[in-house]
Length: 335
Figure 1 (cartoon, one colour):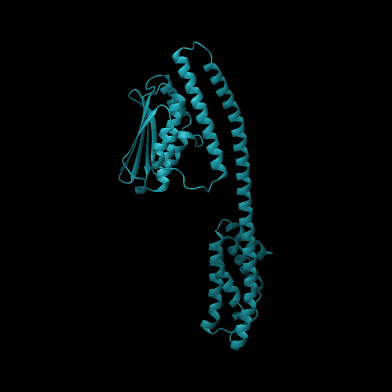
Figure 2 (cartoon, helix red, strand yellow):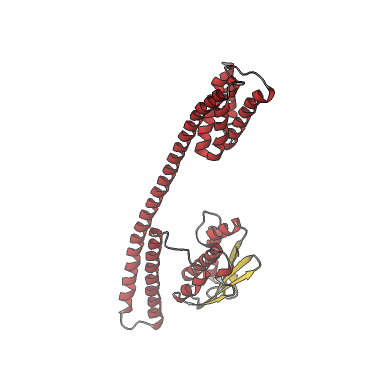
């Protein structure tokens, strides 16, 4: 009973030890004890401790094969040669036959561990597929609901433009509403298409900023002082996402903006992205953008707030605030 209690305490104390460490440590101790016999010329004999040690080594072999396959070699080897304690010194043929027979147990334990490892991998992949399928279903539902509402807004705006005698300002506002709704529908279609085809190719980078600017209203001027080939694909994609989020904020909160300036430069190991607009600095829209950025600055990663957290985690930064007659977003991205 004392031995069982001691084993229980050891297991409880080493529960958080990585399987590789346990397997290598236990196997190394067993190998050292086995090597003691031939190195010192000690006569072997039957020992009760083998009945405890061998099952423990087999369990370590199976556990290591499941979690860290390379580490399973040490306890497996310890099981294969442990018979030396009983037959040393003895005929070479008897030693080889005994070690070969005992190694079959180690091979079986390793095979069981590898089988469990394959089951673990299949289960993880099944969970990932299930989560992705659920996300795609939610994305398609969201697309259908939002597209329905946006289409209704478009119909209303188009019908209102047909009314005679509209003031030019109202007609221009309705035209912009119609164009914005059409762009929103196109963005929804592209997003759902991207979700359904994740392997279609690399994410867009700074070389796609001019194409992004061409489809945006108000006018966007893009100044690139660095080539896409000079920075990593991840940095380029992050810069593109920063600009996309900044332009989205302009569209949402700065309806009076007439121009947006984008500048992408490299400063040593950092890529600097600056987006300026002339829409609302110091006016209520600017205050709204600032309060929203501060409100969402640490709450779970969406929009500019989420990008700020991502950049801070890799040594970059992102800031946003009033600048001149408009708003400025500045990001520093490690290249």
